[in-house]
Length: 385
Ligand code: 1CP
Image 1: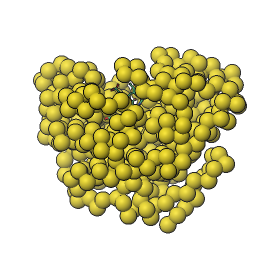
Image 2 (image 1 turned 90 degrees about the vertical axis):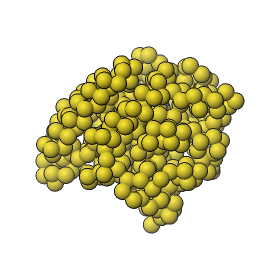
Image 3 (image 1 turned 30 degrees about the vertical axis):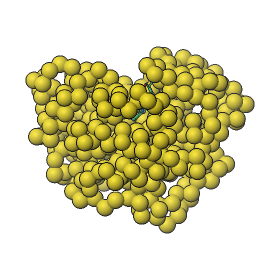
Image 4 (image 1 turned 60 degrees about the horizontal axis):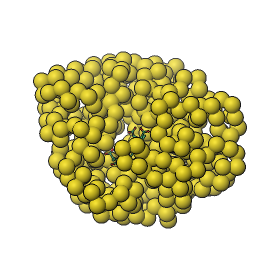
């Protein structure tokens, strides 16, 4: 059934949930889906952010001949790179090989992903005129991603899922406003504080592009979605609520019609976990700084405060996380001890009714020099618990 989503801009976005259901594979006993939905999984699900990429020799081999964005828009490469870590580590989830700036590139924004640096935008967006000139992506500009997703789905077992993703408005805006990666996000924050009208116009302009990128993935058959607000942790909770959350909420509201689990994650967001949970995801991603049982207490307190009459199951979310990526350099005994601690913290939160499930992950992405065998061993260790 086609439903109209809340429209932040003057460009209506239809959600074709029937197409999404037709493309999505039937699952049998998928641990990721069980954990995300608050059911008991047959084993503890695990995947790692940035599991596809430079830690794998087979990835570096492919990338010798192709640029980063070239790989993202090539359906065969996209499918192969997405599947590499799933085969090697027996992951419960694949994450689409793409980047948060892909929908902007597809829409015609002049940007590149520079090796060793990240996304670089040729003409930064800092004025009302530049915001208005920012294109909104059309579904047809993302056809190669749809084709790539089809290839990934063919290569997965029916207990494994494919996670699609997008960057959230704040994190995406940071690259557009700064013109590239930033340590302190000072140009972005200066714009937000000194010209709030321009800031809100930029958020309104980005939101439909993000929704469309996610809809295209949902309609191509992905099983779950993750919205990355990687750099939101640079904001105070007050600023997050005023300048960011309304737009992330619109995105979750628009995507809920597809009925697939949605994850929200940011780095250093310990102080924002409750607010990020209120934006509307089913699963809250936690970085390594906050133990999962403390994270669960923060999330459930925020949900309870927002709606004291809610059913007990609506007062908790599933959690995803949260091994420090650096621990993978510390040897198998340390990794084993840390995994045991994290699983115990998650289980405690579930027993208390403050979390609905646990999807094991790192607290941020795999670091490029990580030994792939250390990653495989970590997956095996999680599956024992
Ligand atoms: O396995 C996977 O996770 C691969 C798919 C993936 C994802 C989910 C890539 C490929 N990028 C992303 C998301 C992404 N891109 C985020 C959110 C997740 C996170 O916090 O890590 C962000 C912030 C970006 C922006 C970006 N793209 C950076 C960070 C720059 C900074 O500000 O510090 C970088 C280095 C890139 C390039 C990139 N994207 C992906 C890869 C494999 C690479 C490296 C490309 C190369 O080989 O040079």
